[in-house]
Image (cartoon, rainbow, N blue to C red; front, side, top):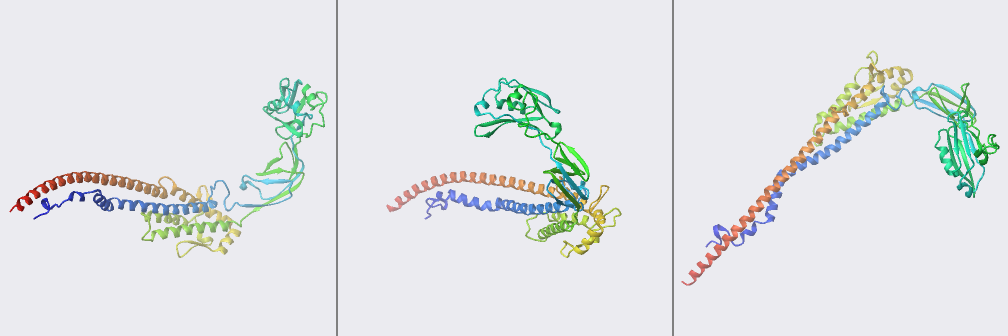
Length: 453
């Protein structure tokens, strides 16, 4: 005799439980969600590889900048200069190396510019913090005119603050001893034109003058002076210790003679060119390793390969005012692996004997750009909107966003499906339990009827 209704045995409803649902859901997830997750993971690897390629492109861009006619914030490889100095009476600086004239500049400083400085008589802390109440203090200068300060209700510090607020002068209360203070007044800038004249009743009371107008020489501790020097024989008498001559900033430090000799520096041209070749070769090797690798995470190998194609189109072109110059004329050669190499002897011969040709090749002119200028623009354009690198990066972001949306939708559909299946299993379980209960009663009646025979 059968052990259950329609083949169902006792307790069959218990088989329709959450473990079964989880197993079914896990199995279906492998075929619906996990393939999308695998693609997302691969894009992550692709992004890392693409970022490395972008970094090598950026390194190449930095390497070609010294050979760009329109280099910003510096000088080209062909405009480098080197300076040697003697003496320490002045320091030399230049904002624009290109503007410097070659040759020797001699500087002889005979007087340094200085501010006008006055100090008051010594006072103790009690006097310093009390109201001065000595009438008017008048300070005059060529630049600021005559300014009156009323000391009636002012302490030393309050007076100092009011003086400093005016143009052309500063004042501070300085502690110069254990219980000794002075009100120090200075011109804001050095030079004779910034000289200060102090007068008035308060001036006499504070010790700046002896009778309200005559300077107290003991307390006039520095007299305003101009810097006086000769630069290549030309005399300068100016209020500042810094002057600029032919693009060269000269700052006087002390009295004495100094010189600077400026010459062209061609020693860095080959080093900078070798740096470009190295960065180019690193980019070529990186791109080749991805293009010819079956397991590469790069999805669009033709676009990545096109980076090198665009660069080679420019590298192997003809340049110069007569379009008769190429890198091969100056010792730059194509290597077997697709990279570049430099024949140092040939290249340095051009540096020493044909610098104008190298400039024509790499820099060119505004109306006929050279190789370095065009390469810099080509690499820049790859990064701009619509450029090769920009487009690839944007497309990769879009692919990842689309896959994440697909994953979210697939997971929601899977959750909804098995939530419904869980409800159905619950209903089926109730029905099976009811059927098994009915079958159990029928089985008991049958057993009772047969036992009496």
